[in-house]
Image (tube, rainbow, N blue to C red; front, side, top):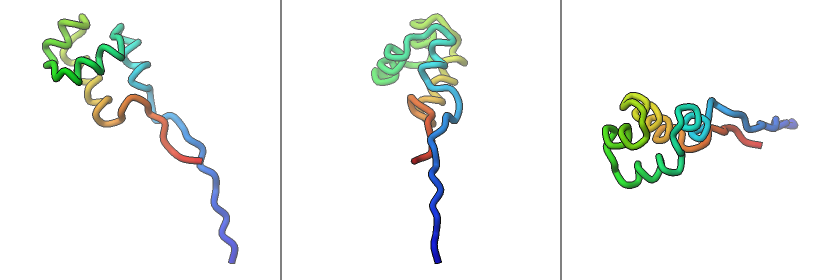
Length: 74
C-alpha cells in the first residue's frame, strides 16, 4: 500500500505584529523592547501615544502568536 503525503504550504494566519504596530503608528522594535523592560500597559500607552486597550491587543498578539503568523509546513 502506497501512502502519498501532501505538501503543506505555509500560509498567513492573520496580520503579523509588524503590520499591526505599523497600523497604529507604534514602532515594533520599541514595543518589543518595552515588553522586555516589563513596562506596564499604562506606561506603554503613554510612550506610544495609543490607548491601553491597543497595547493590550498588541501584547495579546505577541504572547499568543509571536512576531509572525506564518503557519503550516512544506
